[in-house]
Image (tube, rainbow, N blue to C red):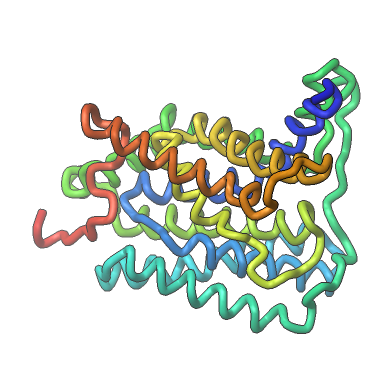
Length: 310
């Protein structure tokens, strides 16, 4: 493997890992509030198709991203109502939304299947920074969504661990009864952060249809929503750790594509399985580790809050 190829793989790892990063960051915030959302795959697909349709209709990328965020947010609102207000099982609700979102995206996107995106996010090299050897080509020669993800990681980390709002968020997921007794509106916060997580899932989907592979193809998320859920555990519910995990998963996927391109004599099916095998491996390691120490999972994750039981 040549040095230039290694640089290309590292750059591709960032590009490929960015949609997973968006989704994982949103899920970290939602789970910090105590709500588990397994509907991310469906929200990604709805975000991908709504972003593509609005982008194709308006030729405005900002409107496309906004529409994608709203698409994911609407599904997350439905999940919030079912799980927070009606106190239904969060796993069942999330799985139902994945199935619903997959079907809805296929229906909405049927007229656009295979159509190239009329507008897309192109790479924009940052002056001076992109010229730094190794670091420049790897980190600073991407599209604006990648640069936005860099800032988002820091902003969310700062929000969660350095602000009073973040303290309330963590309290809501750890001990909602205690937070409620101190005047924190547990129900409202869980709604807000779950919807926010769904909106980021929609943005992650739009990245696929407007930047990564600018077109619409049914089921184009390819299981990335599920990988993002595993990444949340890998990151120990910490936004700063999520960026490393996302690029690791992205790098494994990018490596598979590169190996196929240079003619490595391995089954393409095996190479395509690599990111998912890594996901299983991560879950096994984290599960083993969690037996001996607390790894950061919110204490009330997945448990509906009932004020009468406080």
